[in-house]
Image (cartoon, rainbow, N blue to C red; front, side):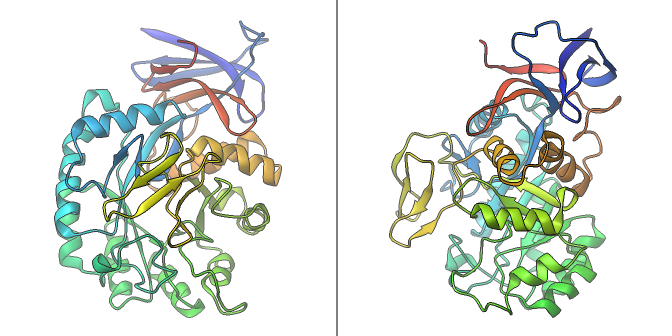
Length: 388
């Protein structure tokens, strides 16, 4: 059965009709006008989020051993409402036992028919990061450790060999060898939560590191104005950068500078959302019993430490805000939130609207604070309709 989807193509705002069959895009052709011109909407490939710690009350790591198949499905389906058709569940610094349990459960659930292939793979953020205060962020010190290839191999097997990327601190003992081994296996190494100087950053890139994780964050508040991790990562043209554009992690001018330096081709917009995303404002407790506050403005933080605790804003917010801050086109914004992550992680079946690609598509309007998702299609199936 063939389906036609109409919208203003995100690349040039021209009306098009996309024909899909058996979950794939078959044909794209320009049309004179949309059938329903009362509400013109953009048509774009679904968003790809490379850093989802959790969503809608579901945590992929800090779950106290309580992550369930039902929780994974819930988070996936709730993300569809925000236009995220593919994502990388992100497991942050924790014990080997929690890693193994949750990777195994994710691997079992990943191929469920109701997931529609939306779980593209996994992001291991830590535990091989800097133990220094400020650089470690919200990652618990008791679980931070040096790169351990034997442990990582065990986690990789538990994940069904689907860890697509791992964030490490390149100054840690053994990090370069670890980077070489990951690169040889096709695993994308990211630099994050580190305090490495230029020589170490450049060496890590030569060994295969490809991207800086949430550039501008995972760093101490007070740094040397000349010798710090920012300049070396911005200056290295081989290194991409992921950035959180939720309005709290980075000031607008910092986002503008990152965009001017890296350009739309070397930036990935990420969310860094946690299990508290989509929950009502209020105070919550994390696994360690610490008080987490989600403000009515959407800021998620640890009041006692006066530090952020991940994000509560979905990727649709970041896409809107980078357009507002930089003046970039919808085409470039979608490129940074879909095409670039697809290319970085070798997801060759998605990230653009082309014949033969997965029919992962969104219809959206540009609202006052985020993309307003009207419809989401995953593998050609309508999985979310705001009008129903």
